[in-house]
Length: 104
Image (cartoon, rainbow, N blue to C red; front, side, top):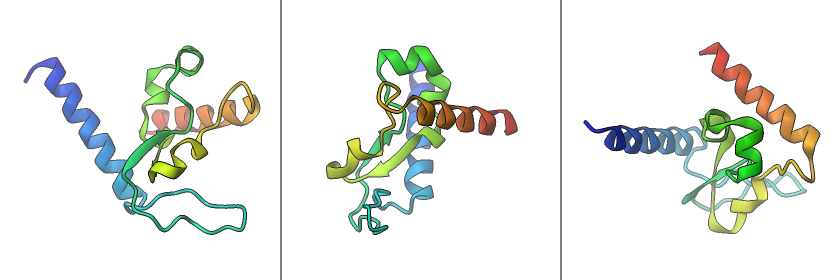
Protein backbone atom coordinates (compact mmCIF):
# COMPACT_ATOMS: atom_id res chain seq x y z
CA UNK A 1 0.00 0.00 0.00
CA UNK A 2 1.38 3.41 -0.97
CA UNK A 3 1.87 6.22 1.54
CA UNK A 4 -1.05 8.09 -0.05
CA UNK A 5 -3.29 5.04 0.31
CA UNK A 6 -2.19 4.63 3.94
CA UNK A 7 -3.03 8.29 4.61
CA UNK A 8 -6.46 7.87 2.96
CA UNK A 9 -7.18 4.83 5.13
CA UNK A 10 -6.15 6.73 8.28
CA UNK A 11 -8.41 9.66 7.34
CA UNK A 12 -11.34 7.31 6.73
CA UNK A 13 -10.74 5.48 10.03
CA UNK A 14 -10.58 8.78 11.92
CA UNK A 15 -13.84 9.98 10.34
CA UNK A 16 -15.56 6.71 11.24
CA UNK A 17 -14.25 6.93 14.82
CA UNK A 18 -15.53 10.49 15.30
CA UNK A 19 -18.95 9.89 13.71
CA UNK A 20 -19.43 6.73 15.80
CA UNK A 21 -18.26 8.48 18.98
CA UNK A 22 -20.79 11.26 18.41
CA UNK A 23 -23.61 8.87 17.51
CA UNK A 24 -23.82 10.13 13.91
CA UNK A 25 -25.63 13.20 15.27
CA UNK A 26 -24.64 16.86 15.19
CA UNK A 27 -22.96 17.75 18.49
CA UNK A 28 -24.05 21.41 18.51
CA UNK A 29 -25.82 22.39 21.73
CA UNK A 30 -27.73 25.67 21.88
CA UNK A 31 -27.82 28.14 24.78
CA UNK A 32 -30.75 26.27 26.34
CA UNK A 33 -28.83 22.99 26.38
CA UNK A 34 -30.70 21.41 23.46
CA UNK A 35 -28.59 19.25 21.18
CA UNK A 36 -29.20 19.56 17.44
CA UNK A 37 -31.28 16.61 16.25
CA UNK A 38 -29.91 16.54 12.70
CA UNK A 39 -27.73 13.80 11.31
CA UNK A 40 -24.03 14.64 11.21
CA UNK A 41 -22.72 14.79 7.67
CA UNK A 42 -19.52 16.76 8.26
CA UNK A 43 -16.57 16.89 10.60
CA UNK A 44 -15.53 20.21 12.10
CA UNK A 45 -12.18 21.06 13.64
CA UNK A 46 -12.55 22.57 17.11
CA UNK A 47 -9.19 24.27 16.63
CA UNK A 48 -9.33 25.30 12.95
CA UNK A 49 -6.90 23.84 10.43
CA UNK A 50 -5.50 27.18 9.26
CA UNK A 51 -1.86 28.33 9.21
CA UNK A 52 -2.04 30.04 12.62
CA UNK A 53 -3.49 27.05 14.46
CA UNK A 54 -1.26 24.55 12.64
CA UNK A 55 1.81 26.58 13.60
CA UNK A 56 0.67 26.91 17.22
CA UNK A 57 -0.44 23.33 17.85
CA UNK A 58 0.86 21.10 15.03
CA UNK A 59 -0.88 18.67 12.70
CA UNK A 60 -1.05 15.93 15.34
CA UNK A 61 -3.31 18.08 17.55
CA UNK A 62 -5.31 19.70 14.74
CA UNK A 63 -6.20 16.39 13.07
CA UNK A 64 -6.59 14.34 16.25
CA UNK A 65 -10.06 12.82 16.81
CA UNK A 66 -10.44 14.81 20.04
CA UNK A 67 -10.19 17.99 17.95
CA UNK A 68 -12.92 16.84 15.57
CA UNK A 69 -16.68 17.04 16.06
CA UNK A 70 -19.56 15.64 14.03
CA UNK A 71 -21.85 18.37 12.74
CA UNK A 72 -24.65 19.17 10.35
CA UNK A 73 -23.86 21.79 7.68
CA UNK A 74 -25.57 24.58 9.66
CA UNK A 75 -23.42 24.10 12.77
CA UNK A 76 -20.01 23.27 11.28
CA UNK A 77 -18.44 26.61 12.22
CA UNK A 78 -20.25 26.77 15.57
CA UNK A 79 -17.95 24.29 17.30
CA UNK A 80 -14.70 26.14 16.55
CA UNK A 81 -12.49 27.72 19.20
CA UNK A 82 -10.41 30.41 17.53
CA UNK A 83 -7.12 31.39 19.18
CA UNK A 84 -7.54 35.03 18.12
CA UNK A 85 -10.82 35.46 20.00
CA UNK A 86 -10.51 32.83 22.77
CA UNK A 87 -6.82 32.10 23.33
CA UNK A 88 -7.09 30.62 26.83
CA UNK A 89 -9.83 28.21 25.79
CA UNK A 90 -7.93 27.26 22.63
CA UNK A 91 -4.74 26.54 24.59
CA UNK A 92 -6.66 24.51 27.18
CA UNK A 93 -8.30 22.42 24.46
CA UNK A 94 -4.96 21.80 22.76
CA UNK A 95 -3.45 20.73 26.07
CA UNK A 96 -6.30 18.26 26.63
CA UNK A 97 -5.70 16.77 23.19
CA UNK A 98 -1.94 16.51 23.85
CA UNK A 99 -2.54 14.81 27.21
CA UNK A 100 -4.81 12.21 25.57
CA UNK A 101 -2.11 11.56 22.97
CA UNK A 102 0.44 10.89 25.71
CA UNK A 103 -1.95 8.51 27.43
CA UNK A 104 -2.22 6.20 24.42
